[in-house]
Length: 427
Ligand code: NAD
Image (cartoon, rainbow, N blue to C red; front, side):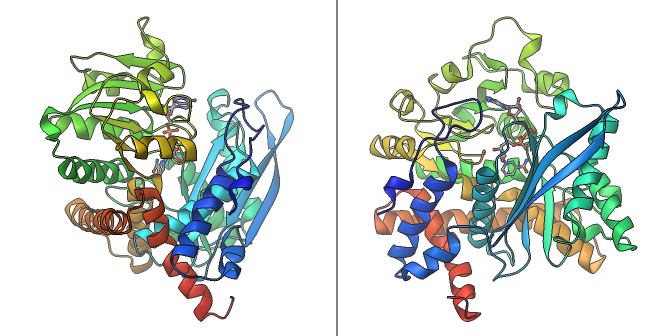
């Protein structure tokens, strides 16, 4: 048992936040034990193989120099190069980056991609930085990690508060350092720089496919379904649009500042048009409710698509949805998962639901490597096939073994890297 690893973290602004790294380790250990692996495999996989901390000096617009702290974690590269996004956020911590790198390994395993997991983060608030300062920070980060990453070593991508422009600056900086054009260094680039069709919407599309599969299992017709989406950034806003276009009634959305709720359905096209590049929309309205109130509203499908630790032991009893699909990384704590499962709410875990992004990132990297680009329909078709296959593998594993879908997803996700690590003679 490693339950005593589940401690309270004092990181971030929520003192009751659960330690994501510890709770991930609990599930990994359980998954490996059920698969019959000895403890040494857990000892290898419970942490990233490599964790780099960097200090990035940036000249700010007022002439002063500000030094930012950044991280890059490479969890396990037994299967192939590591891969994962870079997050710009004031609450980034080393433990968070470590946990997110482990999740990327699990996602790669679930989607059968030839990668291990990686992740990066910089402690900063891009909402308070100018375009020029953000460019300096992005380029400085690449200079700091350049010897550690690369198209065959570790491939970054966007995450919270980073976008295709930031990927473009990072790719340009890496190409200058390497003295050749290196589009395969990073994914999530603009199309003209070797980005892939469908990358921007890939996470949302993958979540939509999982929602359709889950609704099907629960006998819910998506056309009549009432959906709430927490978060209106890259993942949440496209997701709201796809669900709206599929005929679902999106009755609630939110951002970092509050939530909008209308039981008759929100005008998603209008909201998409008005949101800013950080996914902020509620500041334009007076009649908002809080994020916590939104999560507890009556609906059929609830999609946390913002930040971690949103469904906890405090509110899991009040969730009224019959399906919860985690588009965000880590939105439900272990106690929250337990309560939702006991209440027979179908919980589709993050490592499955949000793996569309890394899957199309993989397609982008393959296209960069071969220098031949696929049309959007081909990407869509490949993504849909892969998501449906993985969803059903995990759903059936959960049913056969009488376990929740999170543990089933970890069992599926951890197997390939455990096997690869053994074949290499690491454990
Ligand atoms: P984003 O930065 O584009 O948007 C984040 C959204 O969440 C914004 O609307 C923001 O206002 C809102 N938000 C921020 N803090 C909040 C808070 N405390 N409460 C409620 N809302 C808050 O980020 P994104 O790319 O959409 O990512 C959202 C989640 O999805 C993250 O957990 C991320 O790790 C996960 N994810 C994203 C991708 C991707 O490709 N974008 C892939 C996999 C997982």
